[in-house]
Amino acid sequence: MKTRTIVRNAATAAIALLLPGFAGTAHAQQTGTITGVVTDAANGQTLESALVTLDGAEAGVLTNTQGRYELTGVPAGEHTVTVALLGYEKQEVQVTVVAGQTAVADIALTAGALRVQDVIVTGVARGMAMARVAGEYEYRRPYNTESYAEINENEFKTVGEAPLSTFSIDVDRASYANVRRFIQDGQRPPVDAVRIEEMINYFPYAWGDVAGEHPFAVTTEVTQAPWKREHRLVRIGLHAESIDTEDLPPSNLVFLLDVSGSMSSQDKLPLLKKAFALLVDQLREQDRVAIVVYAGAAGLVLSSTPGSEKEEILAALDKLNAGGSTAGGAGIRLAYDVARKYHMDGGNNRVILATDGDFNVGASSDDAMVKLIEKERESGTFLSVLGFGTGNLKDSKMEQIADHGNGNFAYIDGLLEARKVLVEEMGGTLLTLAKDVKLQVEFNPATVSGYRLIGYENRLLADEDFNDDTRDAGELGAGHTVTALYEVVPAGVAMPRPSVDPLRYQVRQPAGNEAPPPSRFEDELMFVKVRYKDPDGDRSKLLQHAVLDRTGTPSNDFRFATAVAGFGMLLRDSEHAGTFTLDDVVSLAEGSRGDDPRGYRGEFIRLVEASRDLKLLEMEAEEFRPDRWR
Image (tube, rainbow, N blue to C red; front, side, top):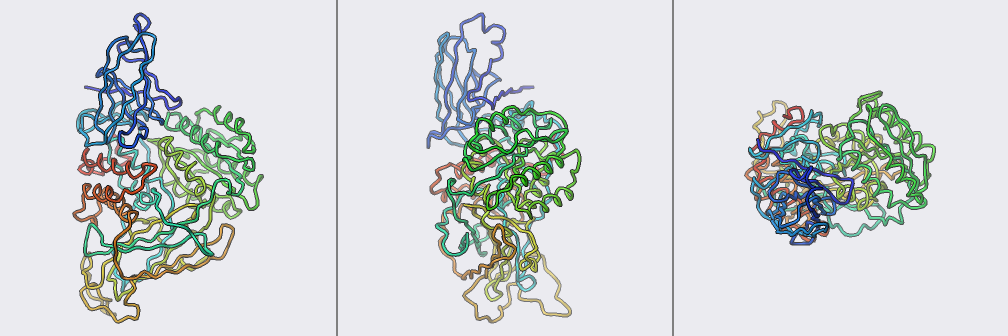
């Protein structure tokens, strides 16, 4: 059977490979080196994980986070270098190698439709022996224990039966990065790995300035739903004020790092160390960092150290090695002990847990972990979680821990994502401006028959929880934005739900075909209320916002968020997607790409195109459940 071997060294800036067939003879013949950078021909951005092969060989290397590659031990003479990357046309260049010298071959790739035979699954670099796309290669995965909490998609509700919709905000972005990892590996993501609200909120949106007494503002828009034109789509946006890094309060950080045996692969501990080095580089003199590790036992490898001592902090990170079992409970307890010892009044006191999610020794039950974390958050020490690696990801447990710790959950699949989370979004990751943020929407029966909240299935609250200040909810950090989408059925339009027998003891409210009841708010569609607390507060504050029953031309941000939501619905096999297709997603996203300085929207478009061209939606989603890996 034909196989491909990919070698990746994520710990170095250049990636070197002694090509098969040359081993043992490289010293006997004159050789040289080929190096270069792979970029996007349209915008010049460097491209990570592009496969570079020589003369059609079965072996190759992947470009690093700076788009750089290096082939060593290449015989002198003429050679063909081939570069392939998901979402781009394969490119070939001719290179002349001179003995003892380095030939530079920078290569620009043009975005285009995929051919299956050109696709290389980058997951090979994450521990797979071989990979298969549409019959060409074969998956040979190690034992897989990834786990995801079940998600039951929100259904339509009638306004007469459920006039209120209440939920907690969610600023996590882990699901998008994880979904991206699956697609780049040529696989359809498990259905329960797709949390639509996290996919939508992954992207930055232009909301404007925040003014007034509150640390965030509320914005709404109304337009047609592209997958069902007779329905409306309502966008509710919360956007917090941004704070420059130099203006952030001092931070008392404890890095809680998993160094167990499961963290040994390149996409885990080696990547973790590089990711945290990016954060260390942002620290100021007034900040402090301690490092706690856990494997068979927990230990303090660096006592709390000023941020100005970067070399000492980086040296402690660099010495870490993986091995042993996973005493996660002991590690969390020790991390909180250290955080309490160096607590900063008025500062950002936070434990940052980095792991593949495996807690299998000690106090590892979800309930025990949650109770410990809930107790500690009351003292003002919050907990954020960063997930790493594949094959062992405990997504459900990690999300729950972060939620109860008043922190964020992110999945780091490469240095670019690490930079996004720990550098570009550091204010939101490290500084909470509002806690226990809850939304409650009241729908006007004069204008609305029914509605459906898109996503947020694991953030739903009882209506009475909205006014209950003891009820925990999500946190909003500096610069964070939150988008919630409601699909609304206007009055007079039939409800898309199974028929229900008439009630015996009361009259059911109009279901869409009957005339709506009279109202003095006929120009309103819905009424939005938001409750939140100050980071150190116990009593909530209230914002209120009426949404008028007027559709308009949607903003680029609204249209792009809609495209992301549609993609998530398709990945989840949602019955509510109707006839919406991946081509529709691409068209909507392309038309709303707008200003995309970081390339996040362009990357999304390429992921959707890859899903389309690889026919991922034609694969049975159940085959890709974590417990069904082959």
